[in-house]
Length: 204
Image 1 (tube, rainbow, N blue to C red):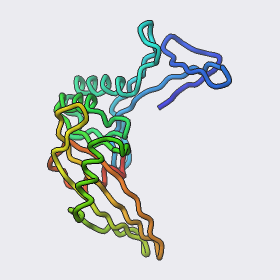
Image 2 (cartoon, rainbow, N blue to C red):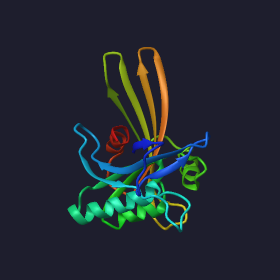
Image 3 (spheres, rainbow, N blue to C red):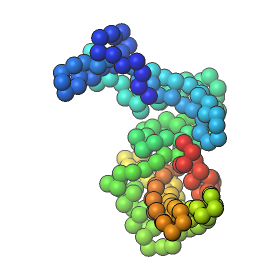
């Protein structure tokens, strides 16, 4: 989340970037931890990212800031959540290890087809039918038909962490029209149902 951009004013904790026109933009950026699902979305904590220092050419990244945030939240609230949900940026073994170290599980979206875990999972799923199918009725002429493929014990790249990989195919029926979407996630939770994981993926 980006805050307070300016080309004229800055402070010691501002991050910065130089645009193509050569003008330096100063801003603040934060990572936020909030509840997902039904409204209201409650913000549990926020951590400002730090600017580059003498030993670094770049401002602090989201991953580093998020690790600091979840450690702070754990210190303050202890077990503040059962599962931490994150976007594709967080599909890294180092970040997943950080969450596991405080006794929580992760659900992370995956998009990069080049990952070995994606190639392995999709290759396996290609040879079999979906493990679960269900229908969600919406309006009168609208419904969703969801198919889910679910397999455990995939290894994250450069790590011994074992995760579940779930592939969702979402057929969105609106009258005579059908739109098909596909999504992938990984999770360290071995017991959560694919129906709940589908809801999490669409409510974050």
